[in-house]
Amino acid sequence: GLDETTQLYLLYIAGERGLTWDDLRKRFTTGGGFSLDEFNRRNYLEERKGRAVVPILPSKRLEFIEKEMERGRSLPLIDIVHYLYVVLESGLDIRSDLQRWQRDGLVQVLDLLYKKTGAKVYNQLREHAEAVGAGQRRLL
Image 1 (spheres, rainbow, N blue to C red):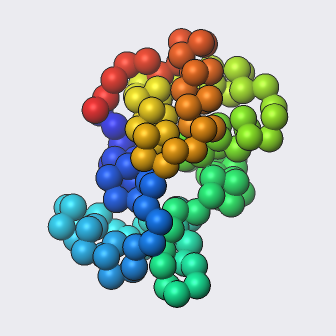
Image 2: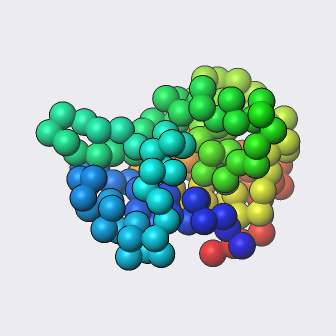
C-alpha cells in the first residue's frame, strides 16, 4: 500500500492553511502515534507569523529531497511528488523523471493533492503521469 508518511501528509497536512503545533500534535497522536519530529526533520512544515503552521512549498524542500536521493535513501511518494512538482514548475521536461520515479498510486496521490490544495501543478503532473503511463495502480 501507500507509505505511511504520504498517507499522513495527505490526511493531516495537504491543503491546510493555519494549524497550530498543538493541533498537529493531537492529530498525529490520535493518528497512530507517528512522530511529528520526523515530519519536521523531513521539512514538510513551516511556521508563519502568528504561529500558524502550513505545508512548506515543494521548491523549499528540493535541497532536502536531493540530499536524500544522493544518499540512496528510499523516498516516500510525497517526496517524489514534491520533486516532480519542482521539475515541472521550473519548465524542465518531466517525462524522463516521471518514468524514473513512477510509483503505484502516483496518479491517485496527485489527484488528491489537486483536490485538497487547488494547485494546478498537481493536475498538470497527473496529466503528464497518465500520458506516460506512470503510477496508474490505485493504492487508496
